[in-house]
Picture: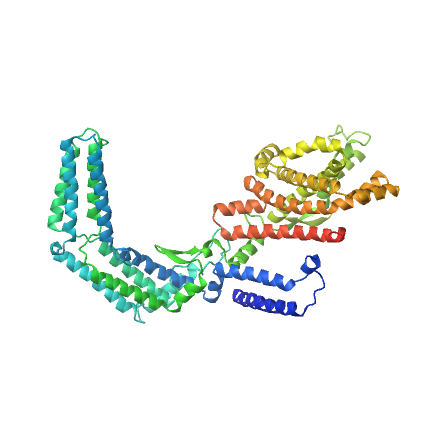
Length: 636
């Protein structure tokens, strides 16, 4: 119901916002000329249109709309798929799925194969003339066996009778299939089927586990589904009965047995089965056996059977009723297919998870009792403040204090002194009150990106400004920066992780390398791009070097620096996922890597959404900082 409500909401939001936008264009007075950035501000209604359209497309192509409005359609299409699978092997015998009869296709193909072998035998000089005559004789006998199968007069009465029986069975099935009471299911059987269907679950229903989900329930839940499943069972039996049938009359059987014996005796004369003459005989025998096991019949023998199959196909399509339109309109880019007793989605609905299932999966991964690999996406844990103090304060504070650390006395007692108490404080070895601290995969990834980015800014911005203002710094550091900057982060990842380990230090240092080069180049470009007239004006007013850097060069460099931060943020997120792919036990990239191995598409899309949202939060934050710190940008 929620998905259905959202579908209507998105649809009417798109229509309403478009109408509102058109009305606004006609009534709004625009004073700004073309090219003025003020013209691009506002337009929230167009944001709603774009977002709603994107979500509506996701609902449609993930088949969530079909699941919402027709929740049992997948189960019914599963039973239809079973019928189509049963019919498929029979259809391929006739010009229904193919352009010509299967018999015609087999005869044409094998005749061409025999002619190719005949041509090779004629060209080769590795086979003596006497053996060539025998091989050509084998080919001719194989070709002569085909008319024995296609001659109507040689067809056994028993074979004719069996074909007629199979045709009658298909016709009877068509008559039964169109009745409303087919199949005749007893009340006890119906109760058992309904109970089994309830245990099987619903279409793509998420279980309480991240790893276990059901895709398409195969036990029929409706009368229409039961009808198609029963027809599929009967069709399978009919198909098996037909393909066990062989058109082997006495003349053909006698010729084939003689041919096999002659080829066997002929090949026994050669020491090696790899001999070219023996290989030619072997290839001819293979073709003879393929003809033997192919369903080759006289051209008009199976016409009645073809008609019965076409009639049943028309009947089953008619019995689908409105389900066909549901399949056509609400299952774009695919449908539900059957493979034996099970069914699966084939098309965009398979690799594009449904929003409803994705939200359910996301809620499970947020649950601290479930999470992903026993770790939630984002949660909190209570941490003593002493641990934070111990993390921030360096241990050497205690070491530089005068005096010695306490030594045990003769009784084996250790009495703390002032120095040991300071050491306990700076190492966090004491108890204080606890506060909630974020934890989980999202927090780990966020913290790694934040630390790597901040470190890159702290080191890169001053160095970039220095390079933009000093020829020594530019000449000394420029080759080093340009040497490693063009190298993709993925190339550095194995080396950095191998040296610094798979924990946070290696990943943060890799992100620091990524952001450092971007920040250096941004700050250098900003410093070197400062207008000379502004610097001269500051000099004429008596400003010192520090004042010029603080009040002229740095503010003029801020647009480049903040733009560099936006670029570095995106690069850091992409690099982090790659690093967590290579080595990691937590983080969004680790979650996606595990999900990829087990084809958990919902989890993969969740990680993509999380990375996009985190990147968007970073970018929006930086844009707000830009608006506050450099409001003059674009107005000078």
